Amino acid sequence: MEYRQFKAGPVNYFGYGGLDVGKVRAAFPLHTGDTVSFPTLPMNQLRQAVRDAIGSPPTDLAIVCCADEQGLLIFIGLAGNTSRALANNPAPVGDAQLDPEGRKLYDQDMAALRQAMMHGVDREDDSKGYAVSAYPEMKAVNLAMRSYALDRGPELIDVLQNSRDPEQRIAAATLLGYAKRSPAQAGALSRAVSTQMKQYGTTQPELLKFLPVRPKVNR
View 1 (tube, rainbow, N blue to C red):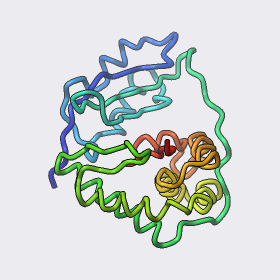
View 2: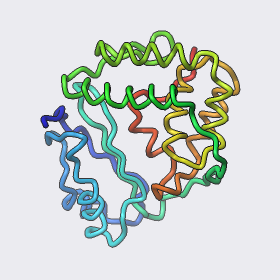
View 3: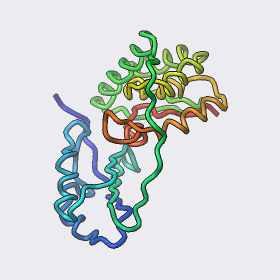
View 4: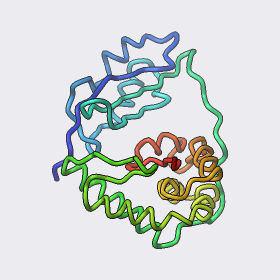
């Protein structure tokens, strides 16, 4: 299978006070201008390169699309004396779940995103406060998500705040970006980005960076 290729943009380091960041730069195998695809990114190799250089793994490793000319943005957190851990909200322990229609729409969105990326279409219209892809198949799914989520804000917030399943919360956050604007919507999304993701050993913000449709509060 062929995957959409991207140029790596600048590699940005933070939290490196007291560390020799030059050693990390020399060891890090991904460089500005390299051509990569998301499915084939060697994330474990990238983390190990940082560990080999300074003796500890990165506190954060995020590769985000996209800067100018479709270059990837690369952010690497290091455990130096200027690194600060952020307090996280505890992970929910409830059983809230999306209904089958909502989960199906989210899964269709993921599948359409992969097709859009393979065809080199990454443009979207955000003018109405929610993302509508320029790729026809994904556009149809996005509009269906809007119709589904429009009056389901409370239900989606319940899943986002009360589901122990991280995948359910990610799907709910994505769909909530298509609901009617409300203070409750904004508050739920704000709290979600500092909620622990115990299943993945990380926090939700790191995963939300890779959502094809990032939660947006309607303006």
